[in-house]
Length: 365
Ligand SMILES: C[S@@+](CC[C@H](N)C(=O)[O-])C[C@H]1O[C@@H](n2cnc3c(N)ncnc32)[C@H](O)[C@@H]1O
Image (tube, rainbow, N blue to C red; front, side, top):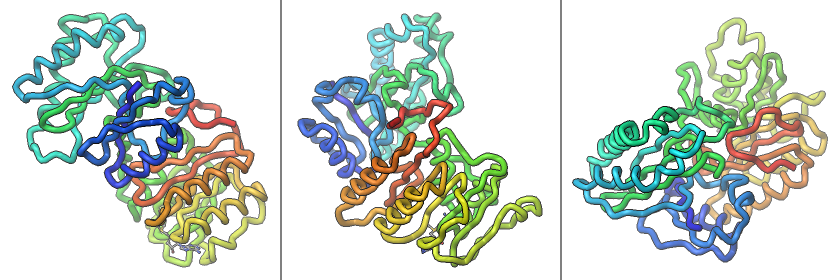
């Protein structure tokens, strides 16, 4: 089986190395585009282990892709062939379905955006006309649809001016519900930093966020994006950072925040808390050491910890992070390079078993 993986351009080699570690016999097709990897030989794995979780640097996957040559004039024809030949599975299914129609950003052709929008329109028109039963089960692509239920995701990717990659997959194959796997979070103009988007994305990914009156420690909190996100949920936050917290808060929220100008590396709460949030700008192994201390004393139920990756040997840090998480007797954990992360990864997890199923299956121990 072939799988086409999408990732951020700068994560191309990291994802390749992650895939090779996962399955040493894996082969890659040479592609001239960064951020687009075709992996061959994935069939050597049982499906469940392949679909069980997504890879750290993977943004989206297209399973068993069909690659076609494209001439702009013939795109409508391709949409027709696609519906005629590949929609049988959807037509015969009881599941809902949606379309992700997009183009890869790294092409200079200005028409690709409108072409991908038109293609979606054409596919929908054709399905309405020829497969009315299937058309009734169509749902608009949105992250609010079925967080844990399964549905078909049709992917139609214009790779560049010459090639199209398409597939009919099901969400439980590890397909991101976001088109192209880009999980853009909603900006809040009261948030003081773009880091706010990172923590919102982490909470979305965990399908879990701080609750009213839960106790949060935010290490490396300034200027306050993560703190603001937790306060918005009604949580009680201790923000630890020598830097200034730049939030203009309602009087209600002001009662819920304590700012401590202390070193987050040595900060220990007097008693265990609900959440550890940590986004300190420090060496990655120092972050892991801090997390280890918290694990050993079981000081939190949930955690979101951002680890800055070094330029040299980032995979070694990732391995250290995995070893730490594996040894911590957690109920579940996950490492992800989030869409809003830069040269960093986010460690998420908990000592508490989850009630709601996550969108992507996590490693449950
Ligand atoms: C990327 S910023 C955090 C952004 C923050 N999460 C937000 O949402 O606004 C990194 C922060 O780590 C803090 N920091 C670095 N070393 C620290 C330490 N040893 N203890 C506490 N904070 C530290 C810096 O002062 C800086 O404010």
